[in-house]
Image 1 (cartoon, rainbow, N blue to C red):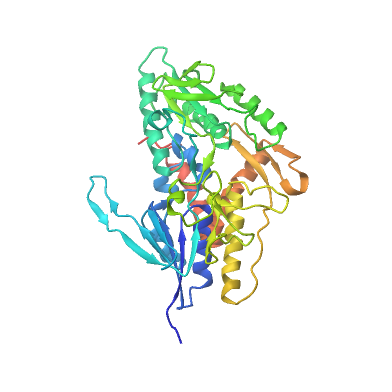
Image 2: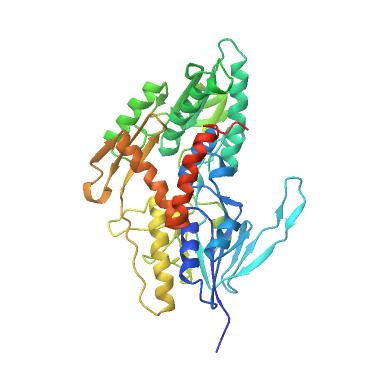
Length: 432
């Protein structure tokens, strides 16, 4: 009898990957024949829909982040720090690249991890569509490190403007999806708080934000009434919304439109579209779509490898109605739940379940000013429009559900309580 443990490796500690590793750890914690390993290139987890709050200092990663090593110790899985760089499907191993510190000194060597079941949950990155100058001049908000880099530059610019009699900070954001819209509102929120922290001249009047969308309206994935409500709310804050505006390049002075107009910006953010990481195409191990997502069967198994599951933003899953599952946090959560069940079914030689995306609606948080969205997407065809305090409560509950999934009820309640207490004793924004 073979006593070799069955190795389950989850690559990517985002919303879906972390939830899946946690639940697998709980389910098989007493089974010595099953090991669970989570791999991520970062040491801590931040819920991706909140990265715009990290970028503005509203959320502190040192306080609100989940440290993988500590979380793994409490939830019965192993964590491996490293950047996934290669896959050997014949020998069933993945390769993690060598890790270096800030000074260039090696920390961890290149190493291989064996797997019997592999789950790809590596998420997505911004799609710059090969637009000239974007990589050199724009900030991205794909990771916590990128969000922190933007935050440091933002506060440096706040301090510069505060020294001027009538200073102005121009910020241009390309992409009228949820990230661009929520970031626009959050920037006004933190600017409004700066007076309390010594920047007397830095007010909302000194901030000029232009939100640029190539399509006919912002929030194109949501119903028209939500888009119109968001435009109205943003206009009241002072955001200039530029729809039907194609960007052909970026330069140090700002964005250049297809009509050769310069949209000036001291800070440029690119939040237009997503794609799976480019290196997936270099592996030559998967069937990919045009944005590098891995094609899967209805069971969320890769079309080419039955022992490899794919969840989250890097997953290309076609639904029976001919639509593709959208890259959202609720999709990743649902996929993690199905793969958890299908892994169990595989061990028990039972037929695997098929994944069917359930749209529970979409919400866009305009900081403390408003929240707009729709609920019960599949049932109401996104017609149940909500806004204001009720929408804000529902929006916050989505994050709470994620906390419940990765911490369990008892610890999640303690974490939420600690957040409430922390808001009383610490600054409302991260200032360092």
